[in-house]
Image (tube, rainbow, N blue to C red; front, side):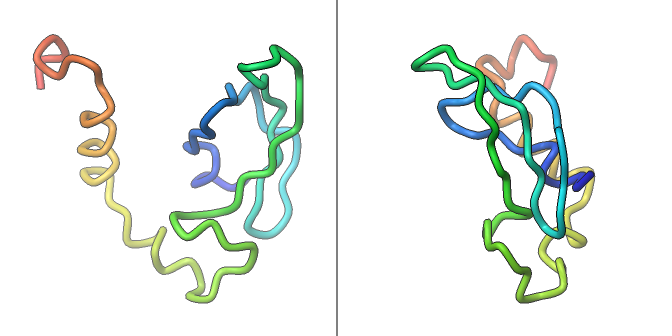
Amino acid sequence: MNEAAQLSEVPGYRLVRPIGSSGATTVYQAMQRALERQVAVKVFCGPCQKKTCPLDHRCMTRVTPGMVFDAAVQLLPDRQSAGV
């Protein structure tokens, strides 16, 4: 599976589990929140969300654990309670 895509958040959907991958995409079983129905969602690799990577995935290989942590902390509703 595409590890980068596994971290993706898709607005309006709750990703349940990956069901397949091909190249720079991963297909997830998901729940569409508005209609409460099961759907399949295709998530493209990386920040640019292009079907084919024009840069040999350089944008994702430069992501460090610290960058991921900092981005995750920014998503927390109350950073104070997380001890950060």
